[in-house]
Image (cartoon, rainbow, N blue to C red; front, top):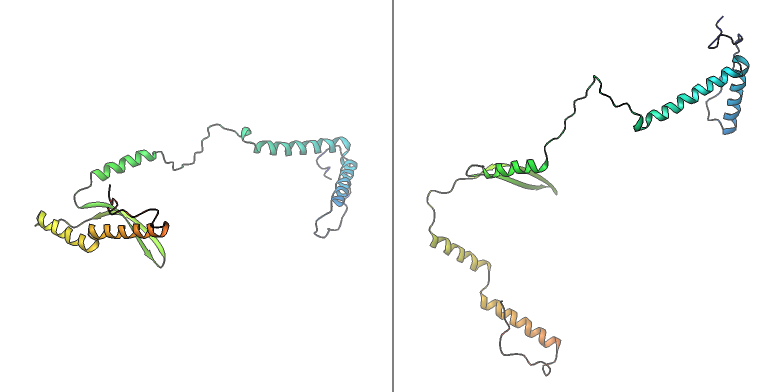
Length: 194
């Protein structure tokens, strides 16, 4: 007959205990179960063996808590290495490289950032584009000036019209803010530019 862990412990007879239903024990029931186990182990193995077993158990629990602390980790080189991808280039290094790339792009080539919106969602595309070459025959400077003047007249007002509008606003402001006897309006136009 096997005498168990401790060779000098008395042989025990087998007792069949029915299984307990699954449930969470109350603190009082846990304490009673713990005391029953200690009593059974003390009568089976002896008081000194139980004390040694519990001390070993507590030491192992303390060891498990201590090994979790970072200062107790083993930090020596081993034969096993895990390859990790590491970004070693600095941001300014990559920025300088892109600046050189922008300086060296050929004619009719550019980098572009294109923002498209579909169904209320924006998407951004960044990349290199190729533009159309310039026409063979360029327009003269007089044609360019005429085009600018023509477009400018469609999109703007003449200076005299703008100055008249400013004078009207100032006169309206003066008439609403104070009585005419206190501050008579000047006959000279206010300055419209510096």
